[in-house]
Length: 190
Image 1: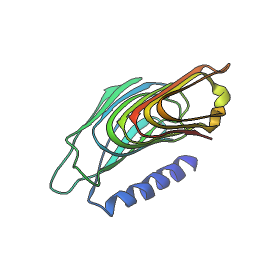
Image 2: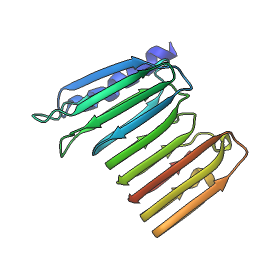
Image 3: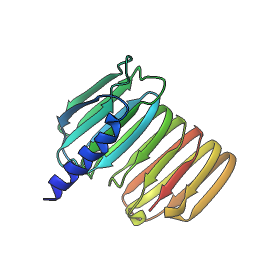
């Protein structure tokens, strides 16, 4: 039942994409606890947990400009690259197992990462980054840095703003989190 509720929520989230352009999808099997590497060009992205044993990507078609979406891998290693995105109104939603390590690079745009258990190495060149951290105690090392912007690390008790700011936190957990942006805000919230 929980899986069907998650799939329904994913479908409803995907419907929001359809208001902009036709929705396209791709997916591959993926083992929980694996590592997903994401190389993303400019756009608006949501990364959510809950797909069970698959990676599911849904995106708006971008009108006359069709992005190149490549999802490949097997077992515990996968790579998603999205290139040649339209210059406006591009949105993609990526659903992964709720336990998954993420390595992500986004050229520009906004990135929201839902409550996914695992190591995270996230870089947004220009834009805002929001990560939901339901269990801060699961992390052993947290690093966040901005060249210009604010760091709202409420999940770990920190706030910084301005130019060339950094935040570090150490705990007893097993996971690590590294989040950085050149220009934008980082929010690490519960």
